[in-house]
Amino acid sequence: MIPVSFEFYPPKTDEQRVQLDRTVSRLKGHAPEYVSCTFGAGGSTLSYTADTVRRLLQDHGLDAAPHLSCVGGTRDEIAALLDQYRTLGCRRIVALRGDLPSGMGHPGDLRYAADLIAFIRARHGTHFHIEVGAYPEMHPQAEDALADLRHFKAKVDAGADAAITQYFYNADAYFHFVDAVRALGVGVPIVPGIMPISNFAQLRRFSEQCGAEIPRWIAKKMQAMGDDADAIREFGADIVARLCRRLVDGGAPALHFYTLNLAKPTQAVLARIA
Ligand code: FAD
Image (cartoon, rainbow, N blue to C red):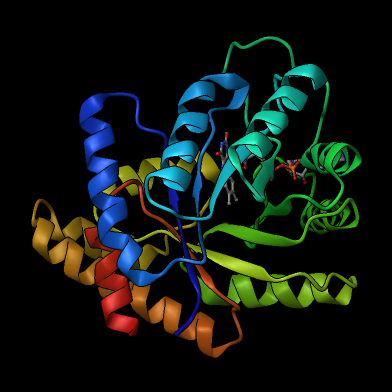
């Protein structure tokens, strides 16, 4: 069985908390290597992330990794969060730059994810296993594709242990990215981030924001399915499962699922690749 991990976002209401508990209980059966919890840049989900990580660790007994983004934060704020996560028992962190919500002022003390990784290593040595973001289809703000690869390598040189990619639906983008960073001497595992498809309108919105490409043929077929949610779910699970099989056959070391706090779309994919 290919190792899997699951990403959740921090619930803010009691209703969302109940839903996350239900989702986690269902997905636990797939024995994830770890689970992670996102963080709103600029601290907008600060306490929710810590609280969710605590519950994933203590109530669910999972290896839980908080995402930590440095944009908008001071060194002192980031140091306090790291101490808090260490006290909670975290051994793993997903270290990111993040994106400032538009209109938010101060960029923060640490400019790029590489600076955050160096900061974590300087304060906590090897205590945390550090995951970073990778962009097989290029980060939308990068000057160019080669500069983006160099910036990715800088994160590994600063001490990252592994990477999780932005989601994509074109396996060749992943294989090409892995070949390109290996040619630069980067040896860390690069785990594909997998976005199951359940709601096409939402997926299109996310993809516009983060620069992930939805292949034209997939978009056209989804559009043609209109409001037929069952057909979209079936088709989405089929194409994402086929993507996962190609990635695993091509050497991907694990799969990281962006669950959006829903169990079924991820389980539909996992059932097809079991
Ligand atoms: P970086 O690696 O710092 O790169 C950001 C940009 O700066 C890139 O274009 C890079 O090429 C460029 N760059 C880097 N170094 C330099 C340099 N020295 N000079 C010039 N340019 C440079 N966002 C959240 O807010 N919360 C989350 O929880 C979250 N989770 C994520 C999880 C994963 C797995 C991924 C892939 C992304 C996640 N994001 C999250 C989104 C992420 O924060 C954004 O993509 C953000 O824009 C970039 O973060 P990064 O850590 O990749 O940045």
